[in-house]
Amino acid sequence: MYTVVEQMRLNYLRFNQKQIQAELYNGLQDAMILGDRTTNVGQRIILPSSFTGGPRQMHKLYQDGMAIVRVFGKPDLFITITCNSKWPEIQNALLLG
Image (cartoon, rainbow, N blue to C red; front, side, top):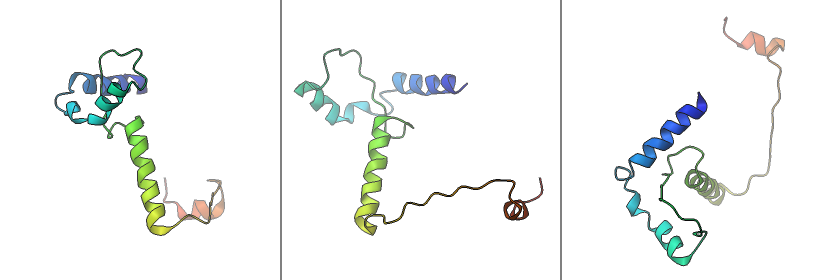
């Protein structure tokens, strides 16, 4: 079911390039002119940064992370927490059901 939904999202983006104003992405056009990975060029389909899991969204998340580091500084702790849902202190904190 996930792949069906993902394919529907990709098809929407493929057939609605005018609505997402894909022609405004000049960086891709510049890269094609310079010859970056254009040996097998077909029809261009632009994935917006709102497409979850796309390279533009990943770049956006990276840039957001770097901005947070710039404002607050480098993180000095990396904390992971592991718990068991059967522990009494966790069972007592949960609502019934």
